[in-house]
Length: 299
Image (cartoon, rainbow, N blue to C red; front, top):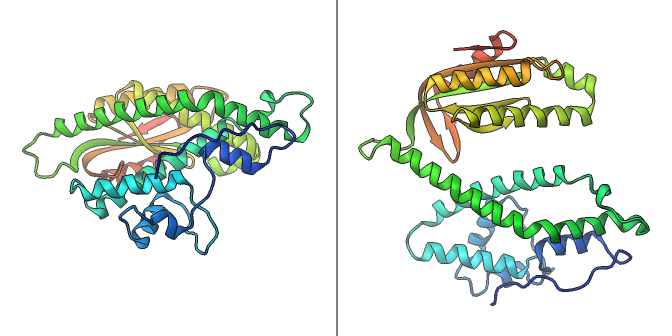
């Protein structure tokens, strides 16, 4: 089985369909049933299904071709990595799940950012102008974005290794460390979203997250995740966390066009697993956020 080649068919605006757009993204088309996709990979059908579910996709059954050559190649690559003995299958599934969840959110962000494809549309192409613009956009940004994604992954991998090394080889558990946990939360978000409507609420959340992310990164912290109208972040020391909180209040709470924010923080031992953090300080920071004053932090 050879590596997949990009689809070479010329797509005209008149003939474009949604399936053409999907094929342009995948650079491949369905050609294998589940049994055929697993053949010659060294994996069982159940193993393949576990990996597919871990990526976040629904299972397919029957004789309809639903898997591409790229799917088969990816499965074979993952299985070969377990056969070397470097990773057991359960660990591989866990890593695959983390990758799938990350890529799913990244894809949602990309589509949301580029959803206004009308600005790229070509006059005279009629109803298929949007699809045609999407195909052209994919062709233009696909390769540079793939290179940027690989670069960002390597950079974050190096930073993660550096953080682990900072814990010290003598630590009994490299998954447990002392951090300052912070929550930043939009005040009265439910009432605010009801008043603004869906579109403006979405814009507000995007600005809130981006400004929080800038403030946290600038002070040497990490934004772990966003949870609706709040963000969870961590810092290695309390002083930097306070600096991040002050920056968030300045960027959001002091802006008359943005809502008020509450921030709660707590320092203590936490467990780090699959990019998330757990432990009493996380719960305490969350509770402090609910009682914090507007545009102030609570420690």
